[in-house]
Length: 294
Image (tube, rainbow, N blue to C red; front, top):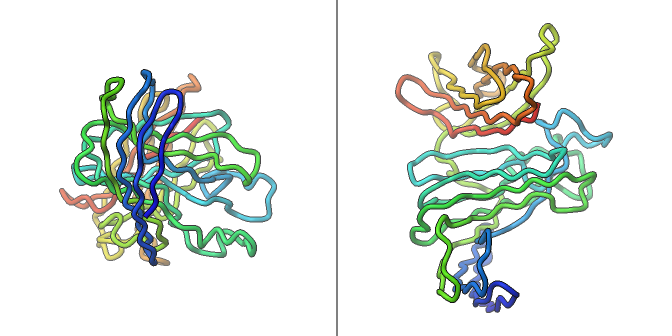
């Protein structure tokens, strides 16, 4: 059991950490905080990670290792039953994403890829880095998971930050109580319970250099044994238009590959994309969510 005080210019409060070690090390966090002054953002359950480059980067930054990261994506479990996966990036400019949710059931920065061949690092052992999962105790109401991605020239700095921000901030001097479990683990269990994103890749289209091809592989859950008739559902936000969408089984590893092209409108605006697989009325996978900068 560990106790801690928060004492800063704008916030004060007390924390209690009940730590249970194991293959899934769980820290039960209980806290009460008070604002001393108004704040623009109140970040709860914050933690950081590192992402230098990965399979979706399009570059290895001149490094011999194919991938270098502590986490490869942000997973969110919404109270509606939807699971959302957002691959991480090392952007050219600082960027912040807000993923709205009401009574979020969980969120975390995960290291899904456990294949040593994808990292080739005998010192850092990135394929063994733990994932971190936040599981609220009780209902947290309306708010957002805020994801901050900071440009980094190397692997020495944590450049990824995630935390929860409540929609309604407490008044100055008013106690704000919250509680959550913080899981440190390598086996994600049934998170999510259905199919999940295995890999995200992108490339230019040689015959159409004005297009960008996105390739998303899904595996696990009902997808592993899904027969023909699987449909890819893709939506693209402002800044680009969607072209051909193809979903096909990969007979080599029991996954399904969803490929599509997007055409930027020339504005240079970042483009939000979402995709998942379904068969008939049955959703087979989590939702892939991606922010692409043309």
